[in-house]
Image (cartoon, rainbow, N blue to C red):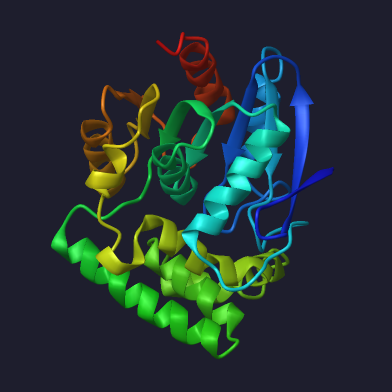
Amino acid sequence: MNTVVSADGTAIAYSVTGSGPAVVFVDGALCHRAFGPGTAVAEQLAAHHTAYTYDRRGRGASGDTAPFAVEREIEDLAAVIEAAGGSARVIGVSSGAALALRAAASGVGISHIAVYEPPFSTEDGQRERFTAYLEDLDAALAEGRRSDAAARFMTFVGMPAGMVDQMRGAPVWPAFEAVAPTLAYDAAALGAKTGGSVPVEVLAEVAVPALVLDGGASPELLRAPAREVAAAVPGAEYRTLADQTHEVAADVLAPVLAEFFARPTV
């Protein structure tokens, strides 16, 4: 494990594997290096890339410093990219894709950006659901009810309440509780004030090669945002990975990334 200090003094933990041009993986909600898809993707890319995985603030071995703002997470990613040599290819998944897109739009040293199923809202009903979820999440976190916050996220993404109740007693549940406060960070990256709408004006500022991916077996509520993001990012390529869901397989995702990341920046 390595650490880098972000602009506000927060220590961000990261791991490195492989050799070649740098690639940084940005996790989605509840995930970090010890719990999530990043390590498997990094291992797949390691033959031709130096792959960086890191714990977003408030997760794993990274610190956290109040007050939170999306800009702090962009600075965290910028610090990891600086540790990687000042420029990197970036892959973001789920809400990590939303963060990566905002970072690319801000001018952070990203040479290529690939995103998989950023879960923005594309319809009024989705925006209303997102706003209701955020209200419940904020209340639970303000009252220190981390378990309830994690449970509310699970139901928001479609898990039946009965299954969530069963999961509360599972050995993995404390890991969800530990990072529950960061669910608010993911909501902020998606756009807390807009109901999670696709940030078209922000995406128009992305000026690097972009690849937007979704899974052919994913529901329309995840595929529609991918199409809208691809339409909003100048020159972006949109591709569907056949038979994949939101939990995309590393051995399917990695070859597509490797081909895209090998393209020239011009």
